[in-house]
Length: 167
Image 1: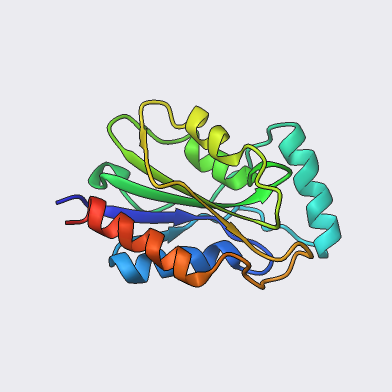
Image 2: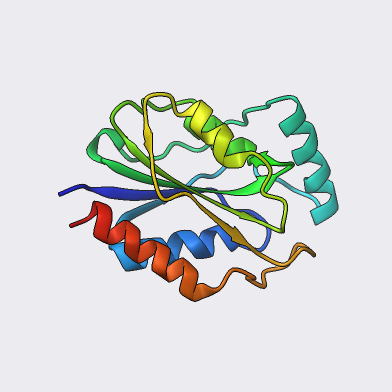
C-alpha cells in the first residue's frame, strides 16, 4: 500500500490550501504547508509585483524546514497557485531540495484562468519522478476565492487518486 502526503503553498485567499485540505480529508493522507522564512508583506498588488520579479529571476526564497521525511512517502501531491504562468517561488525552493526518483507526483494548480506552464515546470524540476492525475482548479479571474471548477469534478479527481494509489 502506498503512503501519500499533500504538500502545498498558499497565499492570499487560501485557494490552494482549500484544495490541499480537501485532498487530505478524502484520502486520509498526511499534509504539510510550505512557508517562506520571510513572509510576504504588503497589499495584494505589491506582493503580485514582488512575485513577478521573483519568477522572472527564478528566485528561490528560503522556506521553513518541513519536518517530514519524504523518503517515507510513495505518492506526493504538490499544490501551488499560479504566479506569472509558473509555480510560486516557494514551491520551486521546495522542489529543488528533494530527491524525486521513484516518487509518484500528483501536481495540482490553482489559477484565475491562466494556467501557464506550471505543470510542465514542475515536471522539469522533479527529475526521476513519475507523474499522474495532474489537475488545474480555476478560481474567479478577479483574484477572489470563488471556485469556478465544479467541486464535484474535484472530488471525482480525488477519489480517482484514492482508488488508484491508496488501495
